[in-house]
Length: 171
Image 1 (tube, rainbow, N blue to C red):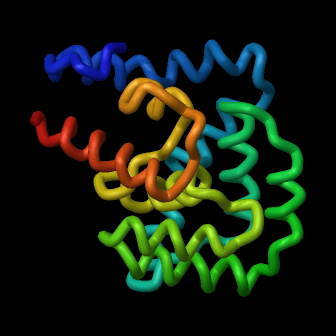
Image 2: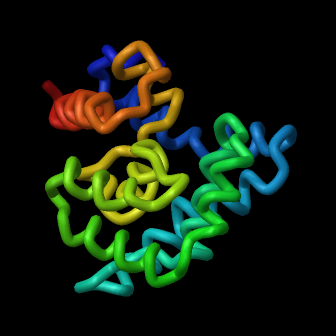
Image 3: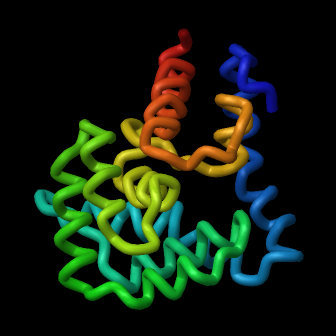
């Protein structure tokens, strides 16, 4: 899909084909359908049920990390880092992050205090709760929006988020 496309129907069709694409990828990536269901359906509900002080738990963060790594490049050290985190540490950092919204810079900074959580994983956490504010920094979206997926920094995420928000507004 060409990011420059301005036809809303084309974008809606691409979104409508998402589940089929996930299912086709799951032939090579075991558990992708289950993990994607957790990320796209279950986790957003869990986070919203915790309003007014939403947080992500350590097991939820671990499952989110499995989802992220299964759909992208597998980096086993990241799972090790997340597994070593304490529940109160994860809950506290994520509460601060969610309370920082709509300031995505501050929210990402709060989450990246957790070992193994970089801007891309932090963006996945935030996108599960507030996708209209914080898009997920996937490799594919980075390439489509800014032409590269090599620079996973806060600065690059903010550029990426701005491009997606501008696109969503039809500009």
